[in-house]
Image 1 (cartoon, rainbow, N blue to C red):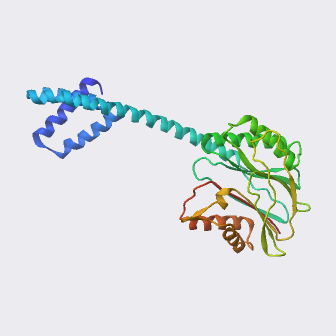
Image 2 (spheres, rainbow, N blue to C red):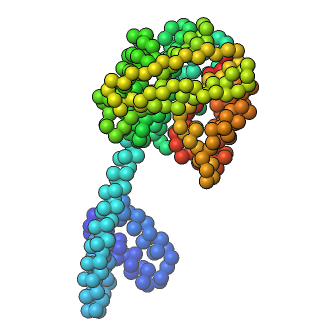
Image 3 (cartoon, helix red, strand yellow):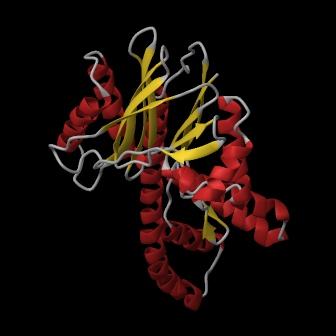
Length: 333
């Protein structure tokens, strides 16, 4: 629609409305308004258009003509804000598009399939609080009977977290080929993270190697919640031991290695702080409460146990997920 035809269309709508005050003309005006917005016509331009339309329809009183000078000046400020909002909207759409790409990329970094081994089960629940998660987990087969398992939490959210996750994934894949132990692998990952991420960021992680022949789990901790171990013999949950500086804080950190043996029906649980630091109404979930919920599901399969706890905590927090949530359950049968 060229400028002349736009003016003619506006004059027609205005004339028809002033002649009969019909709702049809109001609808036509609404549709024209949508068209003007789609063409980024500013408020002051619309004011000028209305003034010219009145002139074309007949003689305009001098005081009405003069009033348009005031209206135009007012609309100039509206126009500036209008363009600012449009600029923000375009930038927001661009950011949303970038976030969608980063979110899709994140999904490709997570394991597509959970490994299957005799005499054991693995269950996983990982849910992002927003489009991009700061949680990361990975499972890498070391040989036919051993696999590397890690769970991590990256400080910050958004695209920086997705980029850091990508770096961790490919660093782990390359280091996995060297057959390092958990403490050595954390040491090398720490050097990678420390050199390549912003100083305001760091990564907490538990990294371990599970041997399905003797059901031994060797692991090391980098500033992360170590997790829980359920002993079927005693019917109790125990806190896993282990501590160490988060990845990215100090370049030459050494990590202590721990080892546990899983007996039949023992359960190993690794998790992020989105599980343990859950706010329920006005208070935070206590550790003994979390253990009691785990205890209630301990006789079920690993995946059912992970799903059941997620569902229970989501219900207790009235379906709010304030932080990324990841839990891995390993059960020896």
